[in-house]
Image (spheres, rainbow, N blue to C red):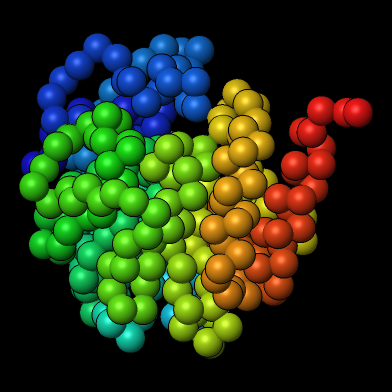
Length: 270
Ligand SMILES: [Zn+2]
């Protein structure tokens, strides 16, 4: 069925009908000029507009989403880790065909989400595969549909498997999290970054923003801490939130040089 209301703009699924979408009213999103609009998965499925999209994005990494994308339009990533398949982030649209295709790839053992803009239908995904979904407790106020499958975690890191580590960088959202996969990129390491570390058109750099639609920069202290945290990890590639938003080489250096550029630019003069 899946008739729980979903925000048309951000894709957040709520447990019950409501007037407003707190995620869109927050200064890191926006309510469209046309006003708050609602839909639900049943309506989206029966519209015939959306079809599953599954495409390899890199070694052992399969992009999972829909064509076209719904709401913000991010794609998820299926990580084919030694410890089993793990899903990084969620795409808002989900149907039986998509579940079947992911099952054909071996299913998933768990899900982790980078930040509230991608919580979307995480409970639907968790239930479809009977797995937990890991969300940082610092962002729990944004959970639209509380569910026992949602596991809150705290602190700076969480190993969701012996070869997969969540790192709370706190960029964009207090709970903003990335996933480090040391075996990724054929052993050179991969960072799955959502838009906590944003892959931008120039793949020699990444971006750090508090609000993307409203163009509010992240606090320098937060960016500095994020760069320091990531200095402890090795990764060749950075996989952002969008199809083909991928830094293929020098990922570690790209993050460090981007933080340096950012901090130099926002520093007070003199
Ligand atoms: Zn919304």
